[in-house]
Image (cartoon, rainbow, N blue to C red; front, side, top):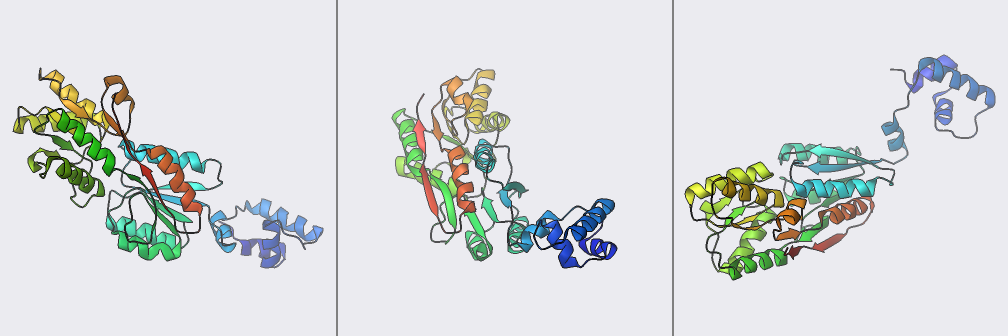
Length: 312
């Protein structure tokens, strides 16, 4: 691949003169410009846009760290980010992580090397304290409450909606509740928020035998219902982390001639509307839009959106 030095050598002009032509700058004579452009065409030279941007102290890449995309949380968040990015002139680069800390650290090192203007962590396996250390190299936005860590954040305040949901279940005489959540890790902020809300309403910890992690889809909900009904045949109430997951639970009960359970979903998906299920709207599309806006800013910001418990 030809370089700027190849153009200078073949045209007989200096590297600085070639650079001025490539960057459409002034102070280049017409004969020199014509000769250099002829060599550029002859060599089929294509400028390295990343190197050029860095030479001007600019970068147009916003990295979005995404553990996976097969859950409505990540889909809605990413849709909001893409919507905000469309007219910004910036490129959104998806960075898959599967919560692998080594992979996430590599993305942070790329921010340090100026490969990205900013990073948006939709979720993460690496500690918030580590993210905070890298904010000296560029803007980092996390999508959870950063607590005492000095990290820009855009997140949904979920606890009041979780409390309202469990109070609804308690009012409907729910005795045992299957909890279907996304991550298996007890340190997951969502897992902590859900179990704390449960304890406040029912004055006890949820039954660990009725808690299932790794829920992402309709099929996962169906399998989880099978697993929980085998443990507790009379289980008739589920709090899930997605409306499609709740729909999967419902379908298992229908397919096995079991009473339709009391269900609560999340994310305000089409399935909650069609099946008339209670759901929780975390406003993730709007949150994604705001996360991108904060990523482009040069100062620390923390923005909170209030989740809503919605009855059909």
